[in-house]
Amino acid sequence: MAGAVVVGTVIGSGVFKKGRNVAEQCPEFALAISVWVVVGLLSLMGALAIAEVAVRLPKAGGNYAFLRDSYGRWAGFLWGWVDFGIIRTSSIGVLAVMFVESLSDVMVLVNGQGLDRWVRVIGAIAVIAGLTLVNIRGTRIGGGLQMFLTLLKVGSILALMVLPFAVFLFPPATEHRPSLSNYPPIWPDFTAIDWSKYGVAVVGVLWAYHGWLNITPIAEEVKDPQRNIPRALLGGMFVLIFLYVGANVAYYSAVSGAEMADKSSGSLSTTPLSTEFCARLLGSAGILVASLILMTSVFGSLNGNILVAPRLLYAMSDDGLSPKTLREVHANYLTPAKAMLVFSGWAMLLVVVAEVAKELNIIDAKKSVFDILTDYCVVGGIMFETLGVAAIFILRRIHRDQTASLPYRCPGYPVVPAIYVLFMAAVLANMFLGTSQRTEAIVGSCYAALGGLIYFLFLRRR
Image 1 (spheres, helix red, strand yellow):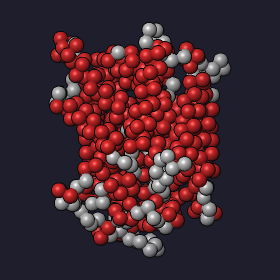
Image 2: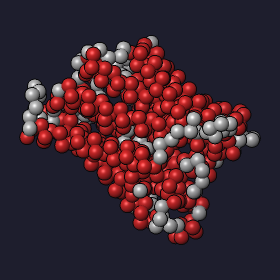
Image 3: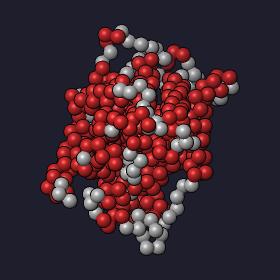
Image 4: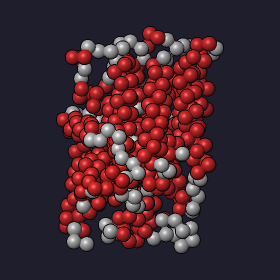
């Protein structure tokens, strides 16, 4: 079950969309695929380390409790501030945008015309509002449905992986066929690799793997944790690496790396890679199938984010770090309605702000709202989820005498968490030093600094 949690909470939209971003930065096939493998292995390292932190600190609030008890109340507050302002709300906005864009693709297929730019923005806001109201009324996805959605996600990616073979054996009446000619160039001269661009590609793929931190709420409940947590993490992450690598290898059979990275192709540059892949091999039916797969995957992730978003505020409120009113439940539906409305309202605002920033050329106009918001989400995640992983060093030093008796200890300590922390620090530095993600890095850091100022002025003595 823990392995299913890892897989089910991670798969969302990245595997269907981010291949274009990787190909743009890493034009060689094998180099692009290596990004998916490297980020998967790094995510595994982070999860193996933070699972020990969760066993040591089995408290409500997840990473909030880890940072608060390891570094101090200020760190816990900053995590909540950034999770609310950037990470969780950006995730909600991103998923809503993807849902509406996929709906637009279906409309193009049905009547030849999709949704224009601002209609898609309004549609994303409407989707967030609708799911928020549904969750306020108490409707929630049960364990059985969540397992079904996970199986559907995995099954759909497996279908994408085998599609080129099926088309090769039973070719439909379409113009394109799977071809090995799409794969070259395979690998660059090692000295010619642009590591800054590789780092940009890593940021895109980090979004696809984002969600492994969700192992922390169940780490203390897993039976025989020393054996089953590593098994769940290893099994879950290797399943994800297999699915992500397999899907991207399949994409290249129909869409070359140059075509993926070509932004001069109009609407194709914003179409999910999985949709273009299916369209080339199956025609219009492929667009419909791919869009429905993506909409289903995104819908489950979006609903889950809206449902769990208020949980953080409960833990923060107990420490006097968030308004008490956000803990209140609806008189009739017994759900945290105010907290849901605040989270969802901010997510709606982020969608609009991202689009306006493009309009005013504050952010690269060639970047989609999806890429802008995922970059913001990853900035926040790198900063504070990495601090959560690094907490293992502090806790091992403070509670040295308890380590031997723990039911679970991070394998490969201290090398495993150290590699993760150092690599993430390098990725964050690359965001500041580069050009394509510098704005997101600066804005995200300034937002975190503003949270620090608020804590120092108003909350430090509470």
